[in-house]
Length: 362
Ligand code: SF4
Image 1 (tube, rainbow, N blue to C red):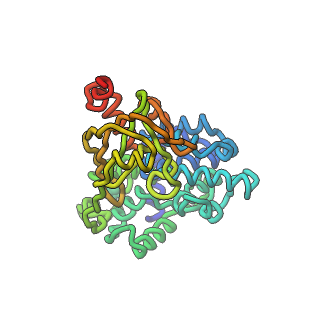
Image 2 (cartoon, rainbow, N blue to C red):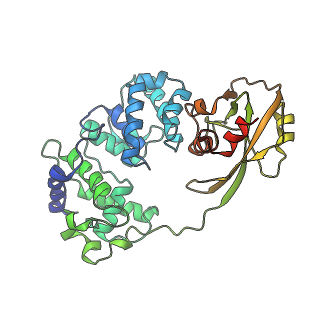
Image 3 (cartoon, rainbow, N blue to C red):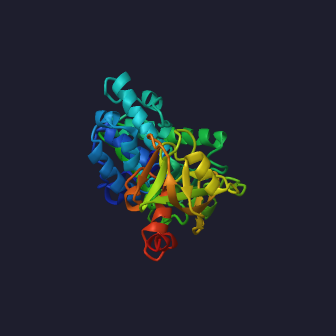
C-alpha cells in the first residue's frame, strides 16, 4: 500500500470509522486482550454483551487468574470456540506467576502466551503500547488480497508470507501521535464495514483508486476460496435423563470438543440407551422417547445429534463432581455448549414441544 493510500485510510477513519466500541479508548492491555480474543471469528454485535459481562465479572488479570475455570466457562457459554476461554484463563495465571501480574509489552513476548497468534499479539501491542506492528486478521487479509490483487488461498504459507510482507510495508511512519493506532483501527473498520465479505461497498472506499480488484472489476474473485471437500458427518446420541423434573448433565473431559463443559451423557448411535444407563451409570430408566434431531456444524465436521428422553425409575449414580442434576431452565446458566442450549430451549422451555409435553403428562 502506498504511503498516500495509508494516509487516505487514516483520514477516512476520522469521519467513517467506529469510535464507540466498549473496548476502544482504553490503554489497558488486559481489556484489549479480552476484546481481541472475543472478536476472533465472532461478530462485534455478538461480542459486546459478552465483553461487558466478562469485564464485570473479571475486571483484572488477577481476578481472572483467581477464578475457577468453570466460572469463566459460564460467562463464555454461548460464544463458542471454548478453547479461547480456557486459554484466557491459563494465560491470566501465567501472567500472574511469570510476569508478576504485568502484561508483557512486546509483540514477541505476547505472542508466546497461550492462544495468542501473531496478529492478535500485534493488535495488543499497537493499542496498549503504541508499538509499530502489522496486523493480519481475516478482515485485513480480505482487504489486502483485493487491494493488491493477490490470488491464492490466504491460508497457504506462500500467500500468507506475501500478505505479511505487504502488511509490514503498509505501516505508516509513526511521526504523529496515535498514528499507528488510528491506522490499525481504520483497517479493522474498513474490513468490517466497507470491504465486506460478499459485496464490498467500493463506492465509499478511500482505497478505490489504488485497488486492483476494484479497477479490474474482480472484487468477487478475492480472497481466493479454499478448495474444500464436503465436511465429514458424524452422528451421536444425547441421553436426556429426567428425574424429578431435573436433567442429568455430565462434565466432559478437558480434551476434545466442548472440553470441561456440561452436556447430557453421550453414547454412540446403535448402543442401547436403557442398557447403557443401567450398566454404565447405575440408573434404571423407562423406554426412551426420540426427540427431534439437531444438526450442528463445526469448522471441520457436521454433527447430527439424536436426543433421547429417558425418565429415571431409580438411580444409584454417585455424582462426584462429574454429574449434576439441574432443572432445564437452570441448565442454561451452566457452562454448556450452544447445541445443548438449543436442545434444551427447543425441548423443555417451549410449551409446545415434545419433551415438555411428555414431562408434564408423566
Ligand atoms: Fe475493498 Fe472495494 Fe475498497 Fe478495494 S475498493 S479495498 S475491494 S472496498
